[in-house]
Length: 249
Image (cartoon, rainbow, N blue to C red; front, top):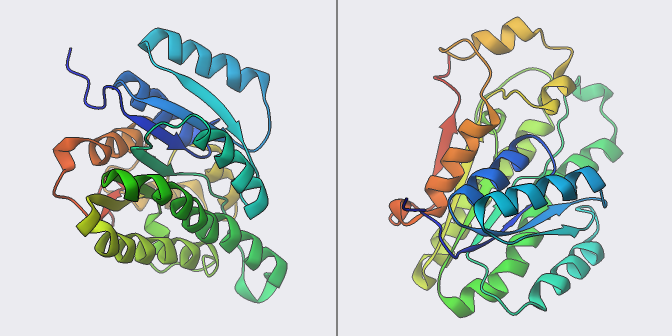
């Protein structure tokens, strides 16, 4: 069986649950070795990635750091750089949700959302580009959201944080293209993950009816799009945003 990413090395953030866990599994199934990043050591997480590693004959190593601390990110990447391997793929998946009336949203909350959803992926990309620019190859995939493209009440912080990462993806894609590095974003609609619970003040029926297919996305469906963008099949796709929302209504 031909595996699209055989021998490639990937960094995936937020890899212990939801879309990130699905991305790790799909990348491994396609032959990629992975640095699976999460906030804190977790035995269940390590057992899961060990099983995925053994099932697919790839190497998966846990890396832990806090996304709201550049010093923590730096230490995490020092452990990755020590291995002296190419970094072919970066999936900036980790993020936090938020839904609330804007006048009731504190400055601290706004800073936290942008720190995790916008600034952390930018910092992570800068670290990875140290290796990718020397290789003159690589693919960066940012997990954005349809919330960064659409206008909805209660979304005045989360939406702009994802809109910023969409703009970042387009700008960085234009800047890095001459060096053989592609940058794209995936914008999921409402997905069947823990983050949906953040939007408890929005009726689930409303979320379902926003999609023409009238259901939530499975994390695996988002992960398949990530694998495609990371592969040579997407070799001429750069600076783009792919909506995975079942058809927006």
